[in-house]
Image (cartoon, rainbow, N blue to C red):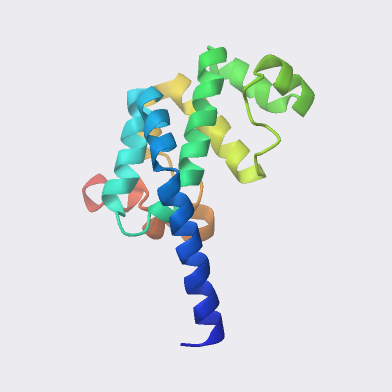
Length: 150
């Protein structure tokens, strides 16, 4: 094992520990999600049980942020307008939205999930993972990778 392999294994172990420590909080969040968001998380867990734990925290973040938007905004147009607001205006409109914690990718996925929920909620479980652009759909376990769906 090389020094790099050692470092990667150590980082992976640290990340796994953080994931395990957050399980209780994620379980509480999960219980508050609309059913289609629960189905989304369940789908990723089922399709990639050995790897999804690496991405679960970021998926949960996007889902929980999308639910915050859904709880405040009722139409796709309102969601589109929210996405165009300044950070300060977003904060005033939805104070619990963690807009300053988002990356561009998580913000866009959060908006996409909220918009999709308002347009056709049955598509939420089928939307790509926020991580698939970086890792690929196969590793994430996106719905599109399941043979029966194609």
